[in-house]
Image (cartoon, rainbow, N blue to C red; front, top):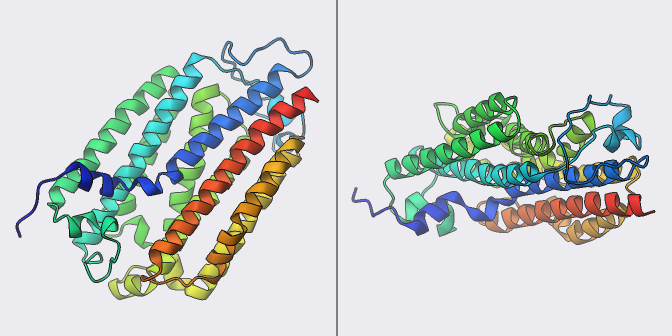
Length: 350
């Protein structure tokens, strides 16, 4: 087969920027939580600490303390300095590079296995190897270069923050490779949704917060559950649309086991659970002003949740459903960011 040159257009389609909400969102939430924690800590109990000061690594509060103000935020003793800002920017780049590498390897795997063809993928931008006639080896080289860049930037984060992040980064990189590569990629197993949510949502959120502040607690993990579930929903939506294709190819995804009806109901339930989690996150620690963001975010997402509940989920409607779940996740993340920052600022003013 005669392949065409590997162009920037082909590279961009492999990186799939329209899916980057799954990598940008958790980093934004971690940054918002860090700012919220710094504000509350700075103005609690006549504390003289400022937003920008010496890094402090306090003892982590218990699970019970994580749900009480002031313990949920003030016990973190979060202060921010220039390293916090640099680490946040670097983590944002690392997350985007890792997701782009995952998207590229996933396209490569689907092309090599015969899943992606002109007949099975209607959207030409969603199968770059097929429609741009790219040499599969070029796609692999591109993915490796993205992972290498992420590794370099990740090491800078480690040097600026803590060596504890090194094993976290190594595990995450390993998951990225195993997610789309090998004889049995994680993406083709029932755990694919969970793994993608935990790594891109949970680990990225917690790692970013820790890199910025040097602190971690059960409350941070609870906040991280919001992007964890939302990102798992993106994978769930994608696999629900691909049920018939996956079953023919022998891929045992969660939707292929549950069926389309149960999968769409589960998707809608997850939407409601994420907003309930967000309400808990802003209400129990006393960030009451953030409730406005929760209500506004839910109002904006209501029609999207309704679409995810009703479908239809199939290859023909795949682009619509994916745009819906990505848009839902984006608004959920925006509501979370606004809820944390607004709640933190207003709580110290009042």
